[in-house]
Amino acid sequence: MPQGTQIIPVGPEAAEAACTVIRQSITHCCVLDHANDPAILTAWLVNKTPENLAAWMSAPGAAVWGAHRGVGHALLREAEAHARQSRLAALGLESTRTAEAFYRRNGYEPAGAVQSWAGLQAQPMRKVF
Image (tube, rainbow, N blue to C red; front, side, top):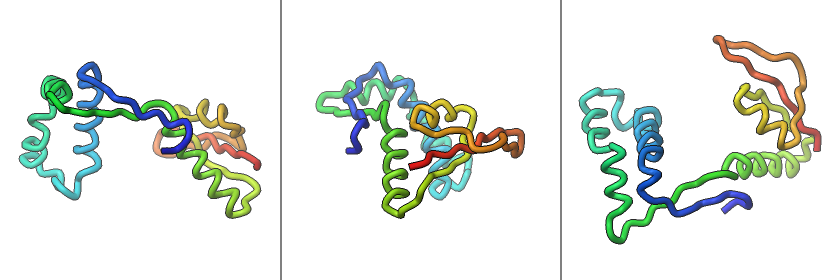
């Protein structure tokens, strides 16, 4: 497990949030499986409710974990380590507005004018090693 990543046991109190993640994952990441066929998707999602997840999480012998803070940080550190091993002097990226504070906390600085695409904005950022 990457340093800083927190994987913790969770209980039924996390069922609603977990249900949202599961439903979005199925809907958006499993298209090869359901091919956006409404009948298949409906059948797959019908039992993915907060109530059912809470029951499954509360079942005797059930073990459920969640990953919290540190996942993004661990992934960024891995990318930076790879860049250093490749003898790069700096690492650049285009940050969404949402992620900009995260990158700033991790040593990245703005590196140019904000870019726009399809109504979205991205701030070029760079970290020198």
